[in-house]
Length: 627
Image (tube, rainbow, N blue to C red; front, side, top):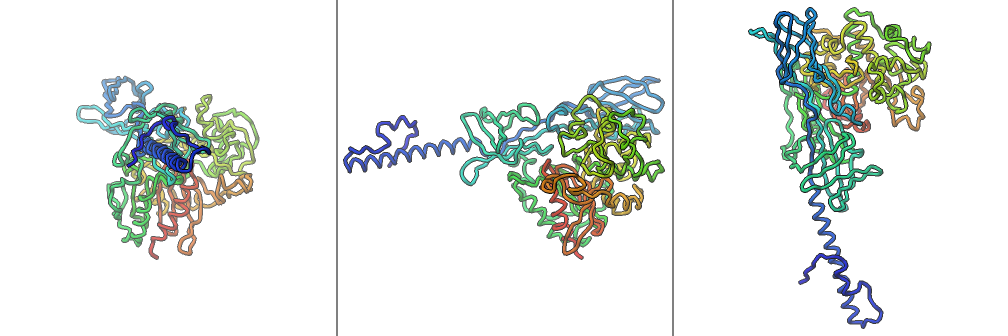
């Protein structure tokens, strides 16, 4: 029996590793055999060492943090004569009211603004920006937000309400696993903002306690300290610490827990939020096809390079909610960042304002409406021609392009600069790059200017206008509207909504602008606002046809809705959609009496999340409708 002791190559120097010509044939054969045994022992030692090191690393790791300490809990407001006192989570402040207007702040930790209505105070809690607001890839929850809050007066004369701010979370999962060739691979996943380290998969090597992650030119490193991995995470600009997790302790890494039984279709729950729910078969849909779709999503591997990281899928057909499923630890009670899908509320609120008699229309010029913010930098007579229609179709002509980091109106440039906290004014001061209506360039600042038009014309703070015209009549649950540094509402995207509530917008549009007897917009506005108004092509974008596909797909835009044609069963269905980075989608298909919502974490991966609309909706959902 051969016993192999794993030692250094120096231990083998008693017998040379090459054959000497002066050795006798017998001795040469023995020598060759010994040489091969020693080489084998080296290979076994190396393999066992590699195996031991791999075992130390393979598996699941995670780091979970709740950042900052936002005020939360019961807010109490007490009045004694002309003096008022508010207390929340140990903080206290005194203030005076201006008639029925109630405003107070707990320093920089949060503030309330509202109005006395009957025995209650109806208003908004304003949560300040979070601790990672200036990080390179800050979480959406790091912005300042306004959320509706009603304080009710009790028998003792005290007004009470519960403040529930958005939590600024950062959860990083790391899975290290063997490749088919025996080397190690790694995948970082972050449900909140899609921070994956710059690549969806890394090669893993180890040098002592140093663990190296490489993908092309992207390099990350961690230090193994006992049973922890410590590493600097660039998107957070801080050192984080990952510890081992069992699969059952990593709900946010897997679509569903690996131990969960096979999926069985269930009718969505009726929870008193306005939705009528039904089984899919009762509205003429094939439950087997829907079951196969959900099981496929559950079975998907989140570690692969092009993983579809879908957080939710909801389907309404014939006015009934028939499918509602959540993944990666999300659930129906968790508001989701809808990113740029929130831009579509510019169109919805404009339609609601027009119905209320506000003097606004797609043809309204923006500069004359906002003349009080002048004088404007970069004067140009073409600015007087920019209309709300130009803004809602990304064709203002302003030097604003979110796909061009060098563009002065780029959303990231605008939001990171500190000289001008009024982003409306910042946008109005931009130079002109093209004639209005002549060139398409996706620009968040354009849509945000529609918020300025709505605020100015209705004399209403944007979160309050959204609450009155959309959220309240649609029976929304908890929701959060993001704010600009100047305190005004931001309409360039980023609100947090419950997926069930977001789907209601699509259902209301299918029903001609109605929801449970409340009219949101006129049917005529639905037809106008979802009709094609701007064609997107190499010619209208000015992008070389060879590069065009890296930025856009050829098609048409409506007023803050994206249009597409979906092919299913030999038929073509017209659809319009609100879309947001990562896979936040509301897809409305009128001819199929269908509305679908997706939320997801594929940030910066349009090639993945665009397939939710272009493939899943026609191939799995429309196809499930029995004709």
